[in-house]
Amino acid sequence: MRAVAYYRVSTDRQGRSGLGLEAQKTAVQAVLRPGDQLIAEFTEVESGKRRDRPKLAEALRQAKVNKAALVVAKVDRLARNVHFLETILGGDVEVVFADLPQVSGPMGRFILQQLAAVAQLEAGLISERTKAALAAAKQRGVKLGGFKGVAVDTKLGTQALIEKADERARDFALVISDIRASGISGYTAIAATLNARGIPTARGGSWQASQVRRVLSRVS
Image (cartoon, rainbow, N blue to C red):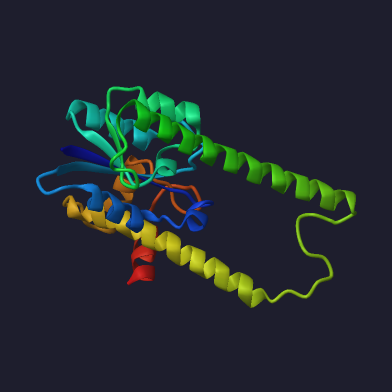
């Protein structure tokens, strides 16, 4: 089998899903058999709710051109929307899920649709519960947007920010490692490649050489 790997990480859900970039790479490698050829890998930093994902579109094009299968680690890494998943599954590219390697054919597609439906329902319920809780708090007179008159241990918040930044740095470092493996070196060249791939910085901006250096220093 020829394969094109697609990985997706997001700033808001990656920690809760427990499936970071490194874990996705491990899952994809585990499903590949001796003799299979991984011809390309694409990494997207985007929410699973969005449909306009340039890296996914590029991965699908590469798979179609090379008559390869698109391999992803888990159903929700590809889509959390049933209709979007159906669109992909109804295309010309075979999709292989590392967590469900034996699922194929009409029954397999049905199972995948149900899994995507559950993920979509879960996301919707979480959103509704959050909105309801905020509305109830507002009716009770709670001032939203911050804690008022409550002593807060700022060290805990600072540590959480540090851990989140470290996690993001590790994900970016893996992408940078892939870029270096392709023969591209130097902070400026790596930054240009990240921008060309459409991968934003942790704050959603464009990469500069200094930012690449800081990421690599953080994980060294």
